[in-house]
Image (cartoon, rainbow, N blue to C red; front, side, top):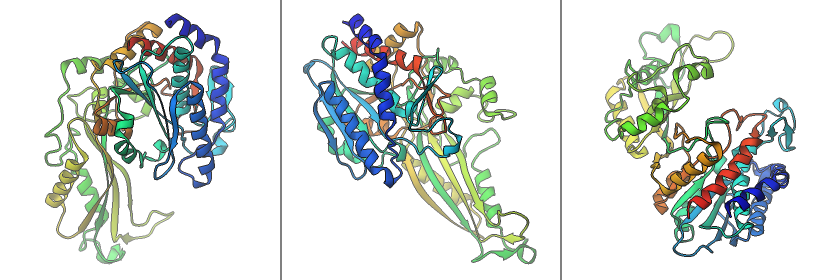
Amino acid sequence: MLDKALSYANENRGRFLAELKEVLTIPSISTDPDHNPDMQQAAEWMASQLRSLGMDNVQIMPTGGHPVVYGEWMGAGKSAPTVMIYGHYDVQPPDPLELWTTPPFEPSVRGENLYARGAADMKGQVLASLKAVESVMRSGTMPVNIKWLIEGEEEIGSDHLDDFIKNHKELLACEFCLNPDAGILGEDLPSITTGLRGLAYFELRVYGPVKDLHSGLFGGTVHNPAQALMELVAGMHDKNGKVTLPGFYDKVRKISKKEHRDFLRLPMNKKSLLEMTGVPALWGEPQFIPSERIGGRPTLEVNGLLSGFTGTGSKTVLPAWAMAKISCRLVPDQTPEETIKQMKKYLKEKAPKDIKWELEYLHGAGPALTSTDNPGVRALSQAMESVWGKRPLFPREGGSIGVVVQLQKHLKADSVLSGFALPDCDAHSPNEKLHLPTFYKGIDTLIHFFYNLK
């Protein structure tokens, strides 16, 4: 059956590509209300695909925003595992349009790449999953039960997905989730992401005088809020890059020897990061290698600063206020709620009495970690080794994916995170692209994956 499914996928590559191009023409931009009809069209397109596969109970289910597409096939029986397949049909805005070589919603193949908004993130990944399931279903019987959760708000924070999952726990119950919204580290570097850092995002405002003042008349006698803010922010790290919020590391899970060996295998070394970023030197906790700092250690970063006069020329002003956007990336077993308390405690202890401050918590998500011994991870690892001829890498991503934490919280279901987009796919940027040879390898990998779950 495996060989028959792989042959089916190979014989139908032309049709698979044509269908991918079809869905890429739909400008399903979730952040723009003008594109709400396109969002509905994209949801209906996904639902039609599920029906064509023979999925049951296919529904376009409302949320407080854009709908969720659901479908299931439970024909493998109660003794077989149930795998949820996650995806999203929304895309980022294509701006700036003038930087695209070809129009963002007119898919174009140039060389080995397919260029279009959403090609990599993540309509191409959804299509790989759909076509792998189709190849298995048309070649025999799917060995596991399948549920689909395809949302339309990932690019705007999945604001309504948490409530949706919480309110449909019985419908969505599964052993684990296959989430191809990550990617691999290179064309010849198959990868399975085993960890995601969480997030606690703040806006810190510091206030001084009731209005902007003349810096010549009041400088030296009124504490400048911009200076006070910079002093507070600078004090949030020590000289070795360690975060100084009280208790910040109390619950940070240590990196095991096995995890350290997996980090050592990753291509994110000093040389590659210097070339990628263009910085003169790396920075951070010296006792950890760069890949561990990115995936296995918590951080605090300033994302933006604003105060006073920033226009062309000069204006000698002592500003009335200053603002910083600050994000903390969290690792197991930290929580956003504890990080809020730690940030407030730091400010209460360190803020001078001659200014006032306000802290607003804007957004957060918990970290996630999936064991390499998870049955889904093992099955995908074996599948990648069959297709690529090498053991995959097991990176931890520095970013966050909300649905992974939500599924753990509400369904007690871990996620198997991968995908087949490459690091240079330009997701969210002009000329987003999908490397087609890797896309086809991805379909073959997922076919192996489903048979490995028997």
